[in-house]
Image 1 (cartoon, rainbow, N blue to C red):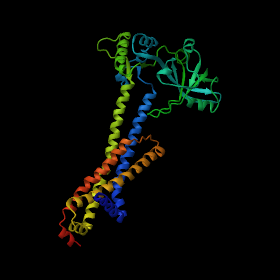
Image 2: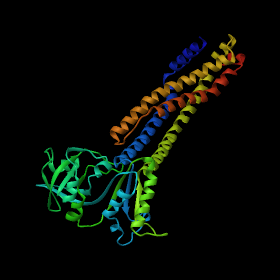
Image 3: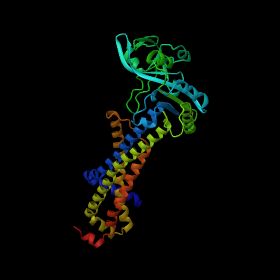
Image 4: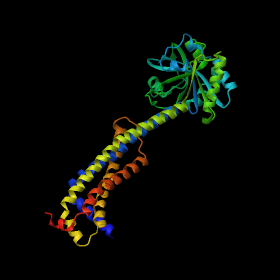
Length: 406
């Protein structure tokens, strides 16, 4: 009953000074809200990066021409880009275990024409296994087949961006488009994959058979990359090492000579990016949490004022038999109530801020239970921590001196 009475007295004291109470809670409200909003932005960035990398394909290795050092901006040796051949991809598929699919690819940027409509897009030459590796889905029609590869057919599968810009609302299936002044029959339209984390439109693409791209469009005998899907994520490092060893043997690279190719592990890239975005999220949350400490100082300040204003009341309570623990509990509960109410209002403010950032700021935000529970717990803890000193000061007042206080 004493606890309930202390809560009632605390609420009465807060309601008696509404404006002061609201201003006291403002620091807690802003602090909790800022933590929730900032962490939601960081979580959104992490989710977007993970989704973007996952959209490239699961358990995927990408072999590119050129050494790892050249990928960082150093100049590659003459002829390096032509070192990766179609038979390299065939050898990888035949000799390396724990691999599901292998698809060599070539690409280039071309103007795509349909009647009076034209659109600049990336044209990729691939094999039929590319669909499984990159987790592509055909929304209408069909994908490139083995027969298309063998016959070097002039057929194309287009992304939704290309379909919209060239055909509008019309059905592209069976229609002809022109690439580099040559006709290609549209046999399929891909399901939309949206933008990557770098802002690249993944639907702005035209896919044609690899052999057609090599011999009829670009006029090359080499490939620009080899996409590999590994059977098990735990085998990624092992398969990567075996692919590197096989290619070194095939390209006659011995001793300490630098590789003329680079094997990128998307699983490792995703792990690194996840760790980086987690650190960014923690940094944003930590910066926002500073305002919680400021809010706690505000609670201490207002509680000190409250103790001074209610010195005579404290003296009367002590004269009537209130103990040190009774007075301590009264003021601690008052401070905790400020933290609880401020925390609840802060949760609403933070959720609204995260929603506004997502709606108007163009950022992806993800609100989860953990930052809400954590920030609310901290707000209550701060109310308790910063309320201890004023409560103790009130409890230690001499009743006679308190009664004399004007």
